[in-house]
Length: 384
Length: 190
Image (cartoon, each protein chain N blue to C red):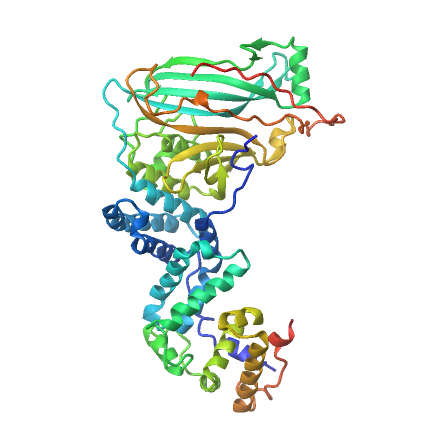
């Protein structure tokens, strides 16, 4: 016997109506319209009123683009949060100042600071290997053809574990410049195409751009083909100040179209700046892009352990940050030795390294672990 | 150390909280509005709800209170606007929908359903709203009370009164069965 409530439920007109869900194109359209209304309601939030008003046409075009991306990704709707977040920052990127023009004979200088995991590979198997977390400064001067100078200096290190320190000791405690000898500074002159891809020929249609990147047509430091490589290439391209607003906008939208890209949320880069992170998981790593949603600036990148099995020899747990890079901005330099005025040299930043106290191998039968004091070599202080 | 991205999570920004709420509640809010607004105005009204929420993003309370907060916004938008259907739940709304959807609706062929709708439409407006929020929007009594600005007790009274009136009006089951007596499950659940 039907209950009156059930009868009433049955005549709910919405029950048989095909109403849009949050991942639908209608939902994305309404999201864009609703959030664009903020500019209308609060023009004072933007310093340039014409900017805000002029933005709507472009915003609408961008919405159409993202809807197309969502529609072409097949029956599985993309998680709306990551699409919406990247759509927003793509819109911001489209309205940034025009790209830096690289004059003939000039170089695009970029500075970065961070830390990474570096391992010594032994000669006979891996008996003698050791691994360290090493902080670095990196400076690149790239001419328009991708040639120029790369300078990377290590500034500090900690052993990943006591096992690593013991292995290093067994090898005779090799040092170079006060750091474990595995850390070799780089200062090299590179030929065309080695330091930066050519940006001018890249399409600014997100779909076409992603297709080119996935096909390996955009070389950016030997990234692997496929989605994981595409995500890395997008990060490489986003931090370049000579990428046009249209290209940077397309890059964020292309990132949104990569299957499996997820929203991490609020995050900090290596120097502690706050941004929003999106990530792509591949081979035990979670690669994160951290950007400022207000400026669209790419603050940095980080790699986080997502599958501890991939790092079992080092005993790293899921969530451990194994590398993190902060981009400190770029500007035009007249030579490969000049740090453009107004940019802070990467040596001005101090990078705190992970402690080695809590890690132990997890793939072999693990030895009993006592509390291990952090092992840290002194930080060199290169002149800035 | 300063952790990288996965190390230290700061509080979500207003925008992130808004996006999460949007993702979680878009369909519910759309449906809520769709039931209460003439069809051609639904999209505009939903957009207005989220535009208001967006402008007030910093006031969005933490989950699970954010849901009720958003329904409150939707209720204000629907009730103060030109979009509100004058006599909610009336037959002509469904007629309008049937026409607008080019016969996609179920039509009005079932006389039992028509009786039921007519009986619903004769409820006091505030009682009807309680019935709709409880049965159609699937809100619990506490949320309904919060939304309507009355006590949980008042919600219970209205709901019971409405159910009693429905049973009295309909008598034998319009679905062709016996009587309509049955527990008001929503009211005894908690």
